[in-house]
Length: 89
Picture 1 (spheres, rainbow, N blue to C red):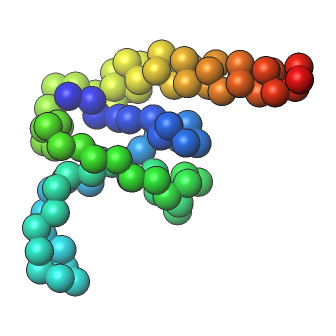
Picture 2: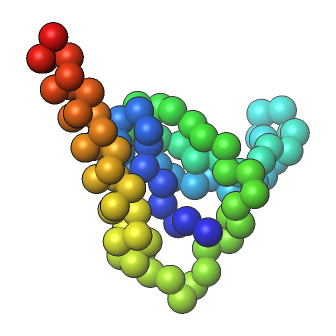
């Protein structure tokens, strides 16, 4: 289970919101990832279905960031390639 996820739209780190019950409507909702605007994100959300929302205590946040780093770099590289393609036109 990933403890972090990188937003596909803005490359910021997303936060996992565990499944729960809505305070406003008193209805259950599934776990989801959010790219929080309050911390500089774009506000996008992603479904976390099939992922265990309880984080294992043995895995540290820095270890999770280290495993997420290659995905983030690949995403940034892909976006830079698209920008270069547009500039070459």
